[in-house]
Length: 604
Image (cartoon, rainbow, N blue to C red; front, top):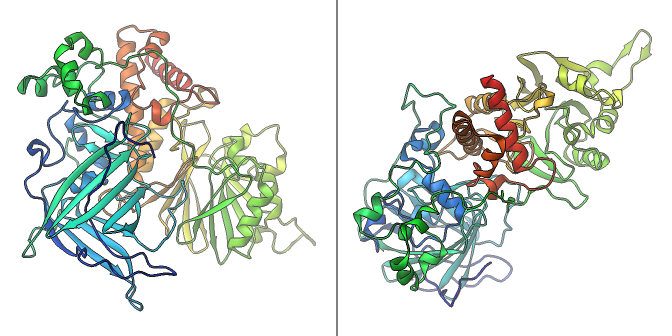
């Protein structure tokens, strides 16, 4: 992990306590059992007692340009978007709140060994587990949650915790984001009835340097009331549709100077950045001009940035299997994600990868079930989704068709491939045995297999003119194909019938099929075309990003801007570190051009 400039880190912290169970189990360290109820005493920075603060108050946060642009274009009423209303809180943000906290030990019921520390925060009813039993962190393509996945160990009287797999959350809830690629290290320690918590967040997307935070919790003498903070989303602005995401266009935030003017500080001191963390910045702030501050309001350069996010797909020549939920599994390692449903009738696959590792895909399925692959569903015609069709088809057996004799002779035994008709049409030139033989034209293709209803929905003119999503009803898992990915900007192939409008409609259709279990975690799980397992929150974030970029481009088109002028304005500056690319099959420039072309065509 990156270290701070200078010598700033020693530790203190919050939560819990115990031993790490395993081969050699040490006794619970004396005096640091933190079970009980807590509340935050007066916050060290009263204005941030709810962790939000005023708009455009970013001083002391080592944000980079992407985070600053994100925050400056974020209006508070974006929280009225349905999927944002009950958004959970990520650590360490979840601890800086005015509510109550409860901490307790989770022990093995037979050995009584401490295996985890759990915490509950009344604000958003956030529950978190810190595992102490040496379990590894999940693979990179596993589901992210707001609490993330945390493991801890005791170092003397200090509990050190490492957290990964967090959703996109807040560093400060006035628009300063923490990305889904952030990692967190925390230290917890008890001083009598006080807990001190020290944390360091490293975020390659939105922070230029690691950021530290500290706070104190006071143990309650009596169990406090007010533990619940239930949230259900609702329509809040009836005149707004799902393709309207509130935002400030570049340079049009009316509150840019509000905080700076109120507290009579130079604007540059409110705009954040790593330099604002150090004492020498005070002198620089006094000498700074207004022009220097205003230069930070807009993206600084016309050069798109490449993403700092690694594709979580393994690339070691092997197929990796991850259980998604119940009888649904994810296979990765051969291009696009492959979903597998197993049950008493055999296996059903959604997509087959590039085909380079098709034999290993078949073997991976055989490890899940002794029964044959009966069906394959293709979400699109692209080779990274259909390249393994031929081998998987020939390795399978659709017993519903080929189990008996027809006309005196046995028919060939192979899996049936299902897709929209346009997938078959656009696969012309590839071996016909790898084509979908069971096609549909519109609406949906329904199937009941392995005691579960399966819907294949046609998404017209999204990525192409033949895209489908697949919904496993009982498991409540949706496979989106490349309509949604966590690894790049939305790709819509205009030449193959794709469109910006169709992509947005498809994303909103997916969101119309989802629900969450609690505060935008759990519920309907999403397997994207590429990337990690998600739920509706990440799909909503992806949809919001596309709408925001669309509106920026449209605003420039309305003023007569050319494509080159739109590119030079860096209309994706706050998202490039997350989704951008300067090389490869789908670059940031290609994405902007596709958005521009789609909007120009729609206007004409």
